[in-house]
Image (cartoon, rainbow, N blue to C red; front, top):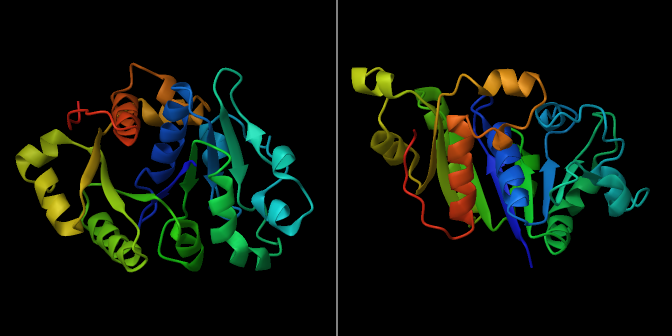
Length: 246
């Protein structure tokens, strides 16, 4: 049986989608079969970051409704690695009533892959609760900004109510601001959010140009952020990797 890992955040724009796509790519590059589910209804951006904009023509709602089998809906996005992509819903006009089946269907999907990586929409809405209900692990992403940290804590509280195991990833760390006292340090963030740390990802000037070009970040070894996402993936696999953000 595979593992269902949900990537969530209380606030948008903290790098949740970048982490979800990066983890999926890193795990697939190690030979694990991975289904990457974009859980943001009609507003997902994973296809842009992965360089496959517009290539997905089916979604999970069609699978739930019985109009399309999974083997036709899931889009294989790498010839070299066992990585598939599937949007939850391509249109906001779609019939969303099948979403009530989502928790049970995700349990079935994870049995077909080594990893089911779910990029949840930002916030604490009903869709997030359904996407995380049976997750083996929920990774909450925040940046060292007080608004994002507070929303991350609220997200952790919601997941705790669902009895979901959680871990924290702090993204866009700028050591200079921490040294100047202009941003909270990592220990302070952990205390505020109340979660065990899984990864630290530095501010990286390479991220935006790569994503705008549709080049998957994870395969760019010159990127400090990509190297840290690789370390997060290795920790998920049970490897010991020192926590650092360089």
